[in-house]
Length: 288
Image (cartoon, rainbow, N blue to C red; front, side, top):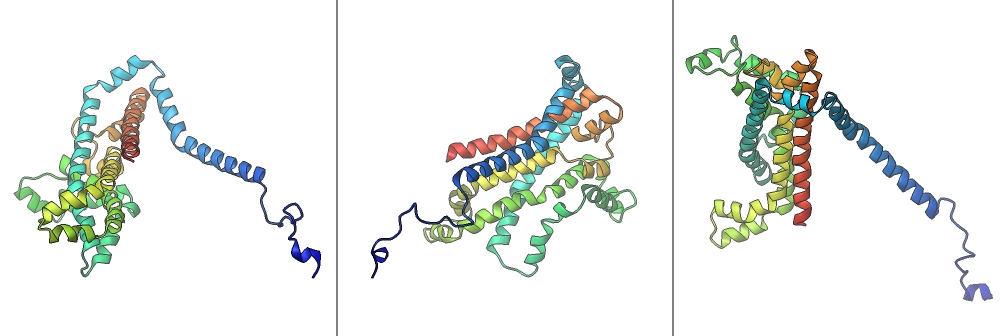
């Protein structure tokens, strides 16, 4: 046996494999990837926000205050917030129940129900508004029933709420389903064996585990409700002072060349949504 068999070759004598990446090249690739991601986010998010700030402040802060303090603008914002809050309340209850049923129960047609939840992602918001108009309009099949009940849905607040509920349906459900699946049923079963009722088990055992999924679902639902445009335009009509939301005001202001008002309202909506999303993320980081 030769000496080479007793002594393995040193690290310096090992031939580098052809496909191996050196450390400096790996560092530059990471930096390039980070630069691409930062540029991508900057173009899609930060640049529009900067453009809104520049447009809103073109005539000074006083012009912004005057534009946002007009009665029709304030009315549009209060209407938007009202619709968003109602949407959040409904989905916090019904969305949680829907996610619970899909995860915990098996029944015929479950796959169809699960698929229909994602329908708002695939259907245009304008089509949603048109479908609601066909259902609740003056010449619709439900028109006689609505007239008998003296209830107005189309071109009124109820229709706008229904449209917003539809387009925001998936967010709460899709946030809670993975959390429920990961949580399992062992702790719920243990609570039941100790004598806890169904509501006690949910509030004391299940809901704490769903907390952050629930918060994120509410956050996304609220932000999406604030920015809804197409569906509420078709079903609400955008009547100034009656069915005009903040997004519809922005559309009207741009059409009437009231650029400061449009930029200011858009900036306020964007900052509210950004603050809600970042706030929920910061709360989660502190919790960890």
